[in-house]
Image (cartoon, rainbow, N blue to C red; front, side, top):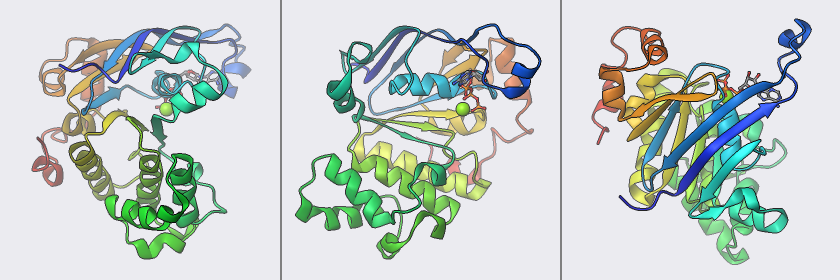
Length: 277
Ligand SMILES: Nc1ncnc2c1ncn2[C@@H]1O[C@H](COP(=O)(O)OP(=O)(O)OP(=O)(O)O)[C@@H](O)[C@H]1O
Ligand SMILES: [Mg+2]
């Protein structure tokens, strides 16, 4: 197997103060270990899944991957470069090699900029020459399955699925080596979920794009991912090929997660079945 794109080494994240107001109200003042000793390798050109229930630390881990969040301890290596040792301009440059897509695409897109502006800004930042921006923006729209006629639209003038496609296009504009998608389809209905997942698989195949796909839904991960890591209470409790993990979950937590999936759902997803490698 080739060198992994991203290597996480024994990452820990401790929050000194609980964020949830309710827990704070209940007097929970002790520090919270949101991520505990997580090591993970993300192989090139494949989709790695990260699953676990709400609050188990998935987003915290994702933010540490991009060093949007400072690890309490541990290292993040991107293509061999230790991101945890970088600061300032050097960190910003390296970080650009990774892009993140969020559940709430609308919230991550500036509402005052139309699609053309959002894309050309990202392209310019990635070093595309000014005269190429218009054509590249059109090409990006096509690549994510959006009609270039929508380039003049503002985020609020797009549907949920279109917004998510635009967020993906903007991430692609930066020519990332790694795309970290944090629950990118959780806010979408089932048919839109299938469309976006198919798009991610196409991008993996056509661009050789490496992805981390975060979800609380083992069934989705099963269709998309070559590897899966199951998280519970800040730790990775199980990892392996999704089919094996689904067929024979070793950890009690994984079994509970599976039991929460409506019967038959991980077996029947007809719209995606044919797209599976
Ligand atoms: N900035 C913060 N300060 C304090 N605690 C935080 C902070 N961010 C997250 N936490 C806590 O860390 C834990 C993990 O949160 P995180 O958002 O990473 O979970 P998650 O798995 O992404 O959940 P979800 O599925 O709901 O998105 C939670 O208990 C959360 O309340
Ligand atoms: Mg989250």
